[in-house]
Length: 142
Image (cartoon, rainbow, N blue to C red; front, side, top):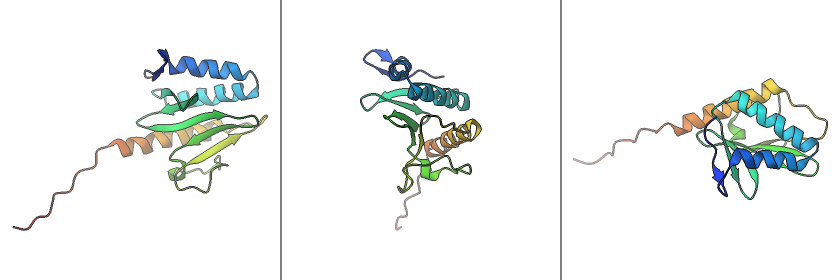
């Protein structure tokens, strides 16, 4: 795993560890499991800590965020609308042009292989966007 973005002179991975521990219930367990799957799918993922306490996983750009609410753990993919989702994991934020999310409720299990496939696809999409596009030659009059 690459070096995480630090906040308050502490690594993001440490802050995410604390966030998971502070939840102290199924939400922490779920977030920890999804974090492990993200790392399995992309060992070079970068962990970040943004927006006043949101875990973020990046690789050539943001892959997804991990938010926790009272009744749900939400994994939001910023470019989710561009990802194939044959197993229909996305079940939230389906109306937008870019973002898609997976809401996980207490007791729900997510298909690990399908989730890792989404992560790998998001990595590939970010990598494709990170490749510099050739500039077009200017057409001038001679």
